[in-house]
Image 1: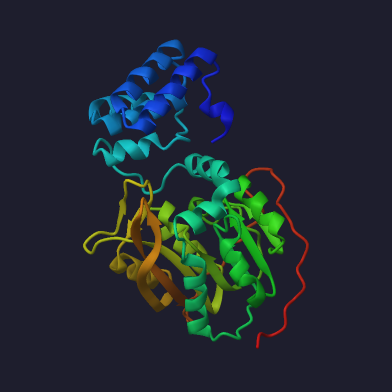
Image 2: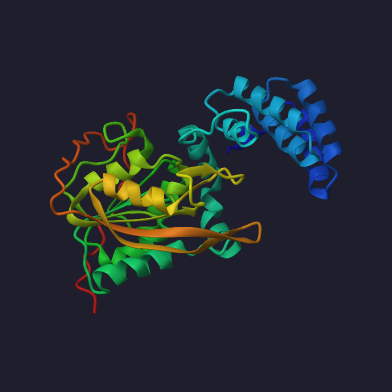
Length: 342
């Protein structure tokens, strides 16, 4: 989130909030709560401050205080860029949303973009790009060249870097303009655009084009509970025999999806198999392994490769707009076309 969202606009309130953060970092959560409340007495309309108070109350074991703070956050910022509704769901006070607010996801990654690669790879042991690329090669053969590849939720291009040499045309889409700017700087995509794949085919903002040989969504579906819209959209972009490659966090058997304390979603293997079948796809690979760490603990995930059945007759939707709204797409110069890999 940007600085102006996190600042109260009042120097005294900001100073007290700063001391509250220091107390929290030292483990004195009660003092953090007290100082944050003092800050909010000065600036009661500070949505980010209320959300921070909710976090401190959680750490202090004050569930009621946390819930009240998160409710106040939603009243002040109903678009929910802070994810307060997700916090209330985790507390059992509301039903978990099938998808988080797009504004929350966009703000989260806009604020994370510049440090994303270092934090994810070095600090969290992120393994998805190399693992998923290996699985694709296992299915298609290491020398396969794809005519058109679509990287959904491309982020800063970590997976795009793996896809580039085997792609004649590579396009990437993401909800966060901050992430797209970093990806554009790498010069690996032939086209980049802002899109919300959870909005459905007509509103997603994907560029119209020929059917794709490969559609990828690496570490994207952890930000969706109900995956039916996103998987159906991806499947409809594929030519017959084309591949969908994605990952998600692994959930327990007996559930479809679940919101986790990390504010990410997990999914069961049975749910994924059902989605694949309903989307007119055939499962090629479903592998479970560690994909990253969170607070020092390994996170298990599913790596999935599915192919569009030859007899599938779904019509690729007409996607007229490049991005949601009236913004211009981010375009990068076309990369030299690689020859067949040896």
